[in-house]
Amino acid sequence: MKKRSIIALILLTTLTHGATSAKTTITASSKPKKPNISYTFNETTEGKTNTIQWEEINENNQRKITLISEKESEIIIGKNNTNEWHYKNNTTQNSLSITVKNDIATIQQNHQNTTKTTTTPLNGTPFKYPPSFFMADFIASNQQKQFIWVANKTDGNLRQMIFTKLGTEKITIQNKDIMCTKIEMKPPGLAGMVWKAFYWFDSSTGEFIQYSGKKGPPGTPDFLIQNIN
Image (cartoon, rainbow, N blue to C red; front, side, top):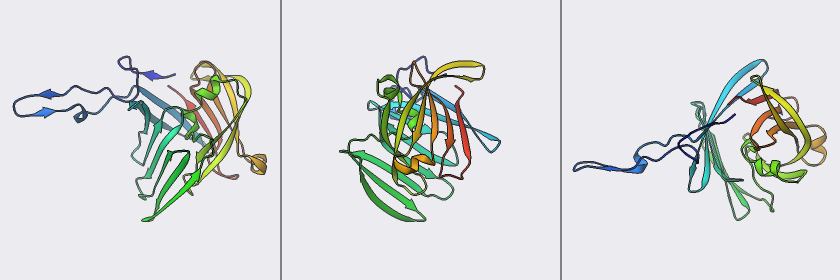
């Protein structure tokens, strides 16, 4: 399912060594890195399917995962949890950045040229957003439930979600069968009675395979996202 570079062990680009001549010096940072891992997802909603591509590299022992899109920019930095998440709509220029340090998330939102900065104490609960990239440790563990924080692109707030393992299930994508761990995701409290979604992760690797559910509140369209690597 993964398109892994044969050359590298880490993710998005291999540095090119600097070359020096009498007139010109080219440093390692002067040429772009190549992705070590590429992700391709099909996202289907209301009868329409779009292909979403991400690329991952390793920088300073952190995973850096970048959305490949002209419409919006999204960058995720972290290893097992999200340490930084940066989003920008390239049409409206609205942006949202979340940085985690000392168990506190600092949220900076720019909307219609107005910038607002807030903080949210995480209280020991990890920020894993998007969850697709950061649930391998949970899949490999003996835990049945895990609380995580996720981000809301619309209002810039963080929200807690409960991930619960429901068992194993075989998923078939492009004529390939994958044995998956099925996960229910829902908010805690009464909200969890009216909204929930489901993830499937490869049971042996923890790799994201499929998502089914809404991206917004009740009444918004349903989405099916599948890993087609």
